[in-house]
Length: 395
Image (cartoon, rainbow, N blue to C red):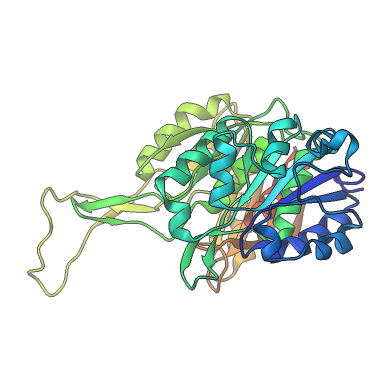
């Protein structure tokens, strides 16, 4: 039975073009057995009519703060008491700003102030509006107050631009709500996660790195936290904001990541190594910028510390989950790494062709000593929740 079965969900819709996705979101929530009531801002009704959501939800759509049809004309109090959870999708920059500063000038903002239930917001806006410092500050303040951000995703936008600011797809939002109501599978566990790329300097202006965005690791950190775990995230340089309440340790090089892991792993019950750690680094770091004088340049490289192998060799070791990102022979290389490094599990994925690095989607095949499970292509947040569930069962 779905964790959303018979749950009372208020879906708040604000005035953004992504409101068209909310129609599918209502259907997906009801497919999971949830009861859905829709609350729309006036701007939202300019994109999709309330009648559409009434037909999909089977419930009247609420748009007015002062509703003569509500008991004592206080619809916001009735809805606040009814809701098990509130999801705002899409959440525009304007709505996020008004919620941050406690405005109560329409039904949706007033409802959010009047509820004690968990609130989730799925930002959706132009990429420049999302990157604006005031928007980032507002989101950080909301997270500090316990409101959970879901997304945004990156990609092409209705305005013709490309970047972060797309609303997460309905299935990813449904999965996030399911995780909220699901049993806390990792309650009392300390999960240590590595994420993102490392950088190995060649000279003061150049370095060796890779295409890792860190999205998979950050999604796993969020899923582990939602499953009740205490989470430490050791991350290379990425353009991502970690979920509120996660202990973030920022690192630069493979050596930095190795040092951070070995200092913190003694307190970890689970170690999930999603980071794309450089296998090699230059033997010598040039003190000055290398000039383009010769037709060829040779840089001598040496191995970086093997973080997974060193953690696996500890006398008191955590449950260890490795990652294998491969361009070919994925199963062969993953199984070899599982055995050679003495891991408990390994999640393998093929990179390239819109999967893995620099993508919001992924697909995993998870191996352990006597079995495997395929996790089909989905958003990284959905896959992260599935992986966390699998880890909890295997432990």
